[in-house]
Image 1 (cartoon, rainbow, N blue to C red):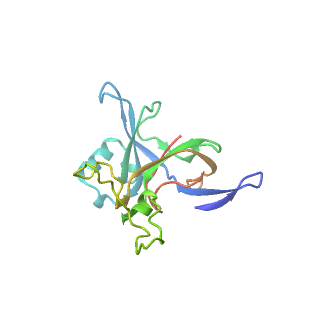
Image 2: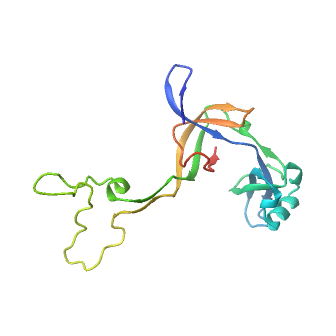
Image 3: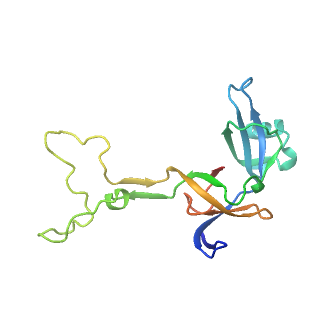
Length: 196
């Protein structure tokens, strides 16, 4: 992330996204596949690291001349007017567009209730000792088991997160980069999906 200044001098937080060219590897139609979709490939890799099924699929889509193998294949539904072998670049977006960004959030491992659910913990007064970040009572009463959905400590992060209504404030066509206002899910290098 970085700080970016708008034309009126307002400073806003921004995220730089490397949105290198996508290559259309397959166009799905209702006649053949039962639905309308476009499959795109991103980030080239060595052909020795790809499976034979992947290489055969890429060869069938006539994108061998683009490098052969790709790290990522993704599918987007209800997109038409596009052909196999087409390139999708950052020029598909414009400054001021509102986009939806989805990705996998940072994994944080096993965390307690204060960090995971925002519990306040216990007070330090009234004779309590070492109970600042404990969960407290989970409700006894007539129950003989812990109810489903009870908020407790556990694994946190590593979930698919979607952030809506993010604005594009800059486009670098030479380096295939987008400048998006605000934060997006994941660490550096996380694969994200941007839908305009």
